[in-house]
Length: 285
Image (tube, rainbow, N blue to C red; front, side):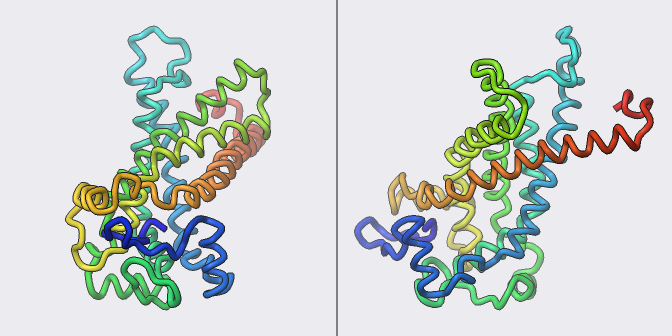
């Protein structure tokens, strides 16, 4: 849906996919259920790298900056203090690191998913699978080709990550304070739902730009701002929000599962540490 009608004036754009449910039905009807899972292997590798960096680096960076910048404010429990600016900066920074690490896999995934033998939209790349796609890009464009559009990916993920974890913890604190919710699965579900919606609103425009830059053939776009300008000029401002509902349908369960499971995993690890590590090591941590 993001590639549909690319750089075509209003009134001339095709509407092969009119919404998330219609899009799913078209793909299943023409390509089978397997068509919905095209590029899944690349998606797994990308998510491991992306969320490994986002969730792994966020808290250490936040605590380190808290200790460095808030020390002179006389705050008690400085490492655990909540500062919106620091939280957003650490969220964005950890997201940028993850996007840079996983960009080649997202590139191949985008091209695999955008290919359709029956209802093609945008540039079509014929790759047999992820390995074939990676090797073709490397042979024809080198390492630089694998990192095509990495700037857009870093902006996209930086935007999303700058609000995902801060919004999650903000919503969590407010739900506990104002609604009296207790720590548990229901609180995690509600907080991550709020976070997922905010992430989708903030991240979708750069997500559209990234998809187009990843999928381009040759040098249709010189960069992020060139792609943004051409898209809005040709298709109108709302073009950068094409495919918003499918994105929301993806990002909500993704955010809910990621953040809820991260909470449960942290609890499990803490229990294991309490049993395995000596008390002196836990006190230092």
